[in-house]
Image (cartoon, rainbow, N blue to C red; front, side):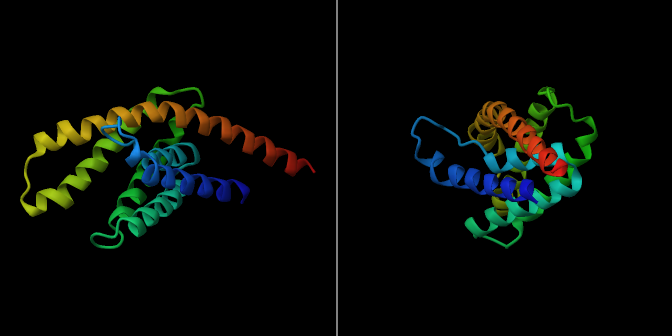
Length: 171
């Protein structure tokens, strides 16, 4: 229970940082998608069931903040990302960083493709080349850099929570 509450609090903090701080940093051409990074990290480490739960929490936060469109637009995508990355949790090794970086690239591309298709393509804005070069590529690069930091921090944080859980189980 402690782990779930701490992870949800961490998710809300990262959501606030993503939406309240990163847009005001002038030298960033794109902001990292911290919510997506945390969702696929949670699901990759904890499995599909937890991935769906954290994906729902992240999606609801995004739906409540970005209310332009149908409610559940982001929830559907984040639940799907949580389930899909949770299926790969059997390949989880703590010090293996290549697969999380690959997942970050794929998830960021799918997220932006989802946004492009349902927000732009449907309205006959078909400049995918421009969208790819000016939105998708910079977001993938900056998200990869932040994945290196956040994923390592999350592993350290996860180890500390496991130690606390073991200490409480003994007492």
